[in-house]
Image (cartoon, rainbow, N blue to C red):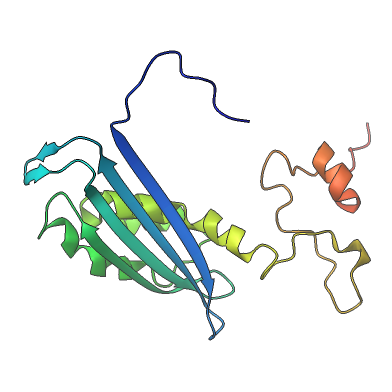
Length: 191
């Protein structure tokens, strides 16, 4: 399904693109490489000077390295295009403050506590906020099983699939769970 047809003619003025790639490393760790770009169609006059249409206003990258428990063991940030060269692109080393945080345990709260406002780059910090769900997608079926283990062999765990009760479609009292994960359907409380 697509978005509805716009009700008025429109002209593209700005594109923000976010790309995240996940890599399994030979040493058992994982890298999440995230990049955000902002590009204006027309020439844009910034306080720091003219930026030609089609050139990036922002081209920022963040790499975090996580272990199999999603604890950050390394972090690196670089700024290849910024609106205020010599200023914006000096904050990268501060993203080492992410080391030790776990993507699944209070990450967004700790991220804001350490790197919000003048303590970080608005765009890099915003980019970091989406890394937990990107990591979950990366780990799904590669590190974590996403299927019902009812027919699993004796050596495989029979744990509830991690994704159940994490979104409206996979609520244990709903139809998708009844159809695809029947052994995990929540039983109605006795009336």
